[in-house]
Image (cartoon, rainbow, N blue to C red; front, side, top):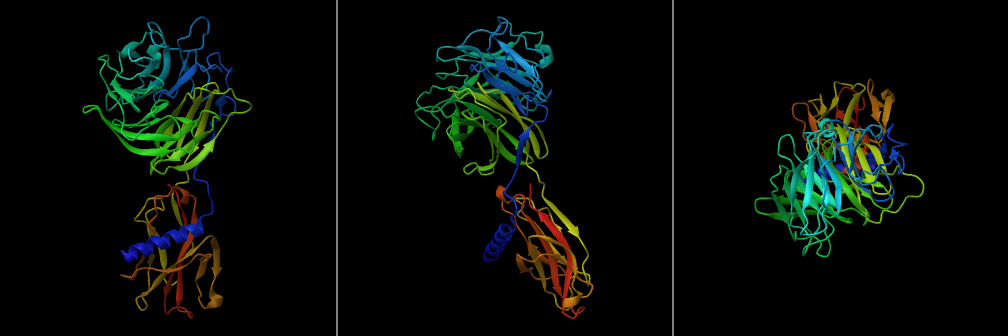
Length: 479
């Protein structure tokens, strides 16, 4: 235990000294989307400053966006528009709204399942008024085919449809989650099926949540088939639910650092669980690492809007992750009254270890694994250690050297590849000519972009100074 603690302490010291950058991610405007990544209100008749747009979803099969707009255009206010996920342009292929009726708002929120089926929900503001969800099987058929009523029943909540999300569609059946601004004795939400059977389970008075409002009222995002995140601002709620027992369990409260950080979505990007959260006042988007949901690490923030924005007094809107490719993802954020933004999120760099130069007297330095945060088994190995004096060291520095000839200090044929300004550390016992230096990396996102160089040093009889040096290795801590 003492040796492990010492190793972890050494790791922390080395990385703290080596940390040369503070950025863990970048969030930049999606090229070609609107103007500098922003579709401002008024750029489309279906995008206004009147709080008539609250639902936005991404279609993983087409790469398009589904926008719900109650703005009256040409006498039609049940508008489900399809926008290009690349440019934001209205593709003029709206979904057929025939048969949609009922609710305080007949349409309000949107979701798209993994199979491309599209769901739009109304807003019910009474426990005695049915909550309704409509389904179109896909974008193409939806242009000419009225929707199927996928759910039409009392939800068990006093208000339903301010927040809405769907999950499943390929491996599992599609289900929805919804909640509203009113509460019944404490925070609550409903999860139901969208197969027209009108089956659902209301989760009331979730232990550990707010009693005077509803912690699920302004945003919902599925993590998996039995876990979701709800939010009304300040603290999002990571919640597990069981539809069989009708029990919901608060797994963690996620501090978001602001009351107005409301609409959110969840994704796994480059193996990292993250949420993107939109500030309903400023339209600033914040991305958090959820490796430890009780202490989320703020990775990056961005805002593509300009000028004076119309106040969003209802706190409504939607965030939707688009395509995720490796360590990058597209994120869409719609703030009611303030338009739609699109960003490229980049969680690079990837962890990387690069060997350069050559050692002398057969000494080498190799890495085992990659210097990725959370890699508890990462290590460096000094190889080819002389059996006459089987002792080895690893020299760490903040910068690489081009290979400085060490002949002048009594090490002919050897070169310096590390600045050696962090320190010299002994490896473990040399066995079979190999000395192992464990360098376990904690799961700490702030260490990303830390860059260090390393070089092995061994005792030898082959040089006047009785020291030999290995090749150099540069380490870039990443994901």
